Length: 81
Image 1 (tube, rainbow, N blue to C red):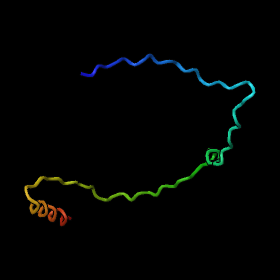
Image 2: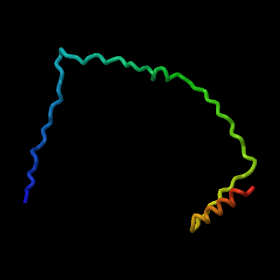
Image 3: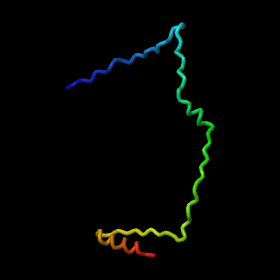
Image 4: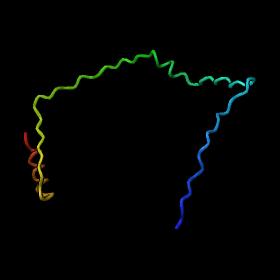
């Protein structure tokens, strides 16, 4: 049988520090300026009015044992005025 050996305790690594003479490089300039360009931009949208129906709609549902029964009911519904 294989015995499990505990792993050695983890050591904390000290973060690398920079010497006094070194400094970080200059931050690169963003080549994309869309954020600044879009901040103050406004877009006007005019929605079209939807036509109102003159009659109410009724959804008919059913469960049928065969495809033929369903098609028959579908045809009856299609020809209703």
